[in-house]
Length: 350
Image (cartoon, rainbow, N blue to C red; front, side, top):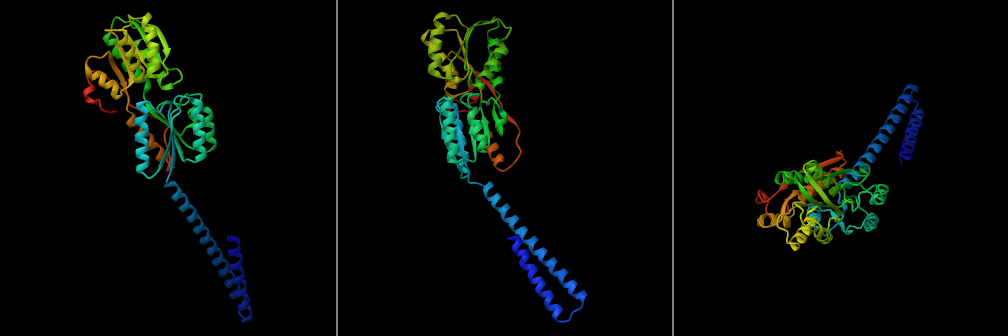
């Protein structure tokens, strides 16, 4: 288009020059006319360029303003913690007129990969991702990278953070650490304990490490450490078996609140009276146990799914706007016990 316009203008310029020549004008007049015509043609071409550039910028601006379609996936969509995050993200996204496609792999990383591939096929502008397995999710991350879909990784880190635009989640190490510190303060003589962790979940690994570091050298003997998969039913079955052989434990640490609640059910069935059970999450169910004043639940390393959701959404829209974001954004964790549970309430998440 630009070449055709320039050619047409040059032809007009030449025609004007011929007319001047036929009229008997001087050579200087002819040269001035030629120069003016060329300058005018160039100006018109520049103006056409600017118009095209403006149109392209307008198109980009219109795309950057949405509407957007986002994907959402977490390790376990039935876990109340993730239910709260998904609800909060969906509400925030839909309030902006955008769409959220949500899936639940039920802790199956192979299913999660398939679901992510399906979401890519549907077309999405970004994805909120919590992996069922930190390393197992890598094939899905490759697919998202190839499709140029930016990832806001939340709550549990993927094994290779170079794939994601940013990460936001609780300070999981501290969430376990505050539980361990509380146990040390309440059991200064130490004693046998059970640890129910989940080695495939980085968040639970971090919590367990924080707990173990806090009790190291304080006289505690870990009589059993097993994978409860972050699940209430699984942890209850495991704890029932372990408590038959170790009914003298002074404490049980669960990597999340469902695990702690499973351990509680097993401890109650075993008629234990003096066992301190810790979880991590700060869920309404755990806080209700703490508020009752009659539960073996001693404390929970609390996190805020609402804050994680808010941070995730804020970061996603910054990415959509082309803004720079940091590699990670930690969300505060803290201990809730019977002494301070009333500050946080029992009818919802903090």
